[in-house]
Image 1 (cartoon, helix red, strand yellow):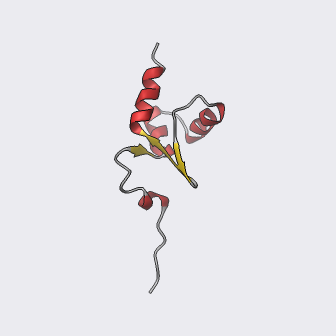
Image 2: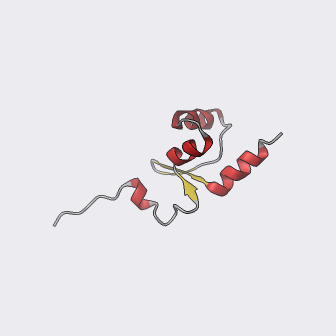
Length: 71
């Protein structure tokens, strides 16, 4: 019997409703994942949660970050 290894996507199934992956957020904002990484390094991007190599963005936190940038 072979055991199937879980992918990062499968591990976040219960959390998917409240969080976006970097790819999903990049699509929502119309930027690249690389831009999200650059924003994180410069400490100007939306807050994110990490668990090991898994990076997620809480949708409510992204919405608050966007609202804080309104002029």
